[in-house]
Image 1: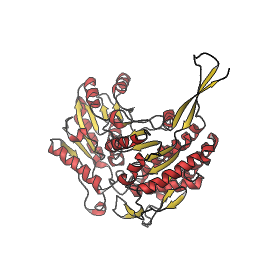
Image 2 (image 1 turned 30 degrees about the vertical axis):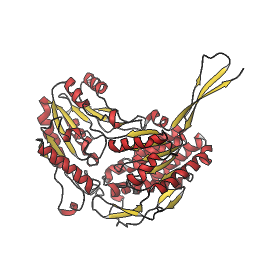
Image 3 (image 1 turned 45 degrees about the vertical axis):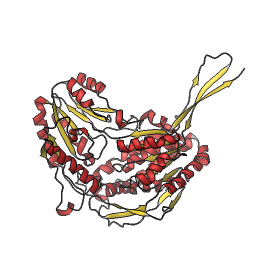
Length: 497
């Protein structure tokens, strides 16, 4: 039976119960006995407590992952890993409404959006299931004298430490767990302290699907007390991280102790380029939602809107009108298009950027006001805003805001907009709107970003690699490249004469 938004128990009272974390197949509290609250960002209400762990808990989780990696899990055949991943996908599909509501309650994403993530997340699991049986090395002809056979083997890298952000808990969890299991690795997952509930739910579903004890561990706590010791742990073979560039740099430094493998998907300040020949009816909502989706809390947000000068004023007016009509509300309301920011701290950060933009001379065309009255007054709500009159050196045009803020900038030539679009330390995404196929190819080739979308945005598929250039990180998630991040290549030489 298909379940619609109207069928969901969206107004079920929050129970505020305590959840335990998962180590070695056992649900447990932190060794210290400490815990912390997690709150619904739309209402400020406590929706649960979870263990506040530290390095001693990480030691237990890593030891469990190592035992599992060296033990029965190492004897799982590719087909068995494939069957397990498919079983996980089927189980998550049966529980999808519960997973979606958990994300909405814990981090604020509108329920229509969390429900719509179903195909992407389940598609990832089923894609990785296929990859599990397609891992192979190569027989290589060599030029040495004598009869020597040379070939390569692909082997799992070992114990993986995964640190994920709060802005997409379900997708981020599966983007780390899926390829790790497909490759034969074990994993210690550290969710964000801002949104830990869905990763714990996913851990429970992993156990129900038959994942062996210790193969998947979920440890909750802060970045300083859990993330840092995980990144530095001498028995972790690889760290995979999604989050801010500053934290990524700290993780990279921490990984040096045992030279562990590292994959980083970091921040962005993505340009969206709208040429004068673009289909404006298509471009306006896509360009707007390239930022406003998830209240701007997306690493690939197209927050620098470059518009060719002849259509600049009209396009900015249209985007501003679109922004002003977006419905702001509790993510549990199926009519909501813009939910809350994750926390009061993030709200303060975003409002600080908006104040800086105005102070530096940008013109606030629409939005930017915090909602302090009525039923939304207790939440972390801010109206999506559009700035015009922005210059490239303004803070709102240089730094990642992670909020619903668009900076509109005019341009005159393709060479100019390429130079300005690339003039950023980041290189995660870029967007182009044009009806000219020559311009589309030229801009796609010249923009220094890991993903370039033409006449669309936010398109992500398990079969297509995703990742950044420059300070947006390195390594790829998705595509055949993804599972390679979790494998070592071994050369084997056998003399047969």
